[in-house]
Amino acid sequence: MVGMQQEIANEILEKLRLRLTGEDRKRLTRRYTDNSEAYNLYLKSRHFSGKRSEEGLRKSIDFINKPLT
Image (cartoon, rainbow, N blue to C red; front, side, top):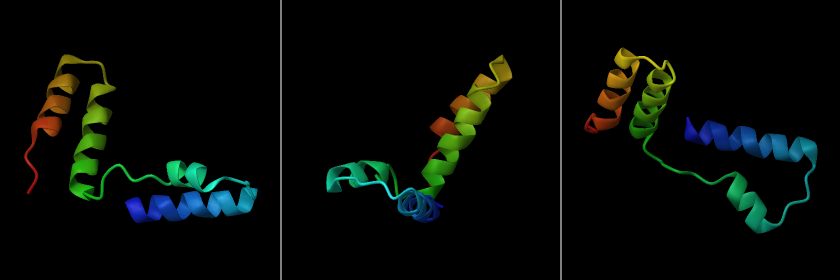
């Protein structure tokens, strides 16, 4: 999934023909994790925390605390 995001970002940059320095391009395509399982748990946690309910917050915490396999 992360590779796809980088590919999309690169395609957008090319289509917009932005003139970026090497450092700017690096910042735009920075990867925060290569672990897709960790990223998916993070997204699920964000989803449930956004519900702003007690149950949603409990589920959010459960996803954040879930050990990686």
